[in-house]
Image (tube, rainbow over all chains, first blue to last red; front, side, top):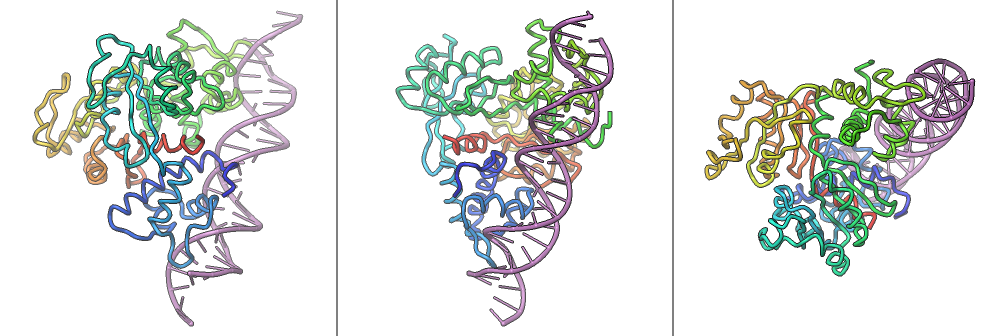
Length: 205
Length: 205
DNA sequence: TAGATTGTTAATCGATTAACAATC
DNA sequence: TAGATTGTTAATCGATTAACAATC
């Protein structure tokens, strides 16, 4: 469990393994092998064994990996064996969809607040949430000790909103705005921009 | 322009460069350097020069890169100097948001059809679109010669829907369902699962 | 011109794969 | 036991960085 020099590229594959294992569990499977898991996720068996073995010896020769056990271990490693509170910033259609998404809770996350700076949106209901004024965002996030934000504001507002989030103590940003963000080294950003993903595929068409 | 042995990891960075250049152009900038572009996107200047030089000599010593010229070249390389028709499969909240997203058209894509298999959704209007029955999907896509799909169906339906899309001639799938897809080698898949992105960050929290 | 910055080479660094002893 | 599969090592493969001549 040499927890501190694991390459990010390995960390990035663990959630994919975890997702596959949970899918297998739903099908009633009890064990799997690096071979089978690899076929499921499109990664070589050798790499899967190598990745997993960075964190401990979770398999058994001859029989492979216990799905519930490996699932538990991965959840522990990724720190999703708990519930993380998340804020949504930007109450447009995408923020709306994320706020109501049912797929977070059984994977370690729950949306707890939604913000926007548009007076015509502030106060609106989104499911159980009321859209709050961005003006109170920094205090609200800091007081609730929230560390994760999903950013669905327009590109032009993304950097300035991020700066505020960092002031508020946010350490992880899932950025849906189509723009690169500048953040301090102790803050993580992940990017979701459908267009960059599409453009990456058109190259091959 | 050795167009055929470019590593995928380089191809994957080009859309990010392109996005940054378009942002710079909007600010009225006319030229940039590998240094400046690198700071913008968080990549070393050396790597940016190396990546770009795989495709030609697009810069000038002493002055850097012309933003409009490099933009044109990247659009050409990525084949987004044209408009790609895209289908949305799954008319839930996310499919809804994607269907109405205004950010596609100026970056090479436009949604042209939306499908669902839920009778309560078929026939509904989403902006200018009418949700069509998935039963007619294969024919409709093949007849329109569409190559790109965005998949926003539930996880349980994702693989079978993908199989139909491939039958229909789809060659690129942007998969929002939280599951790995099995596809032939000539079909590309990109994954967008907010939870895997979040889990990749919680590791460091 | 002098200063700046590219394109490219060589060196370094890191990731993946193949292979197999250990062992369930 | 015999067969299967892990964990790990060494070899290979690929990506990144540093450095600098070329040149705008």
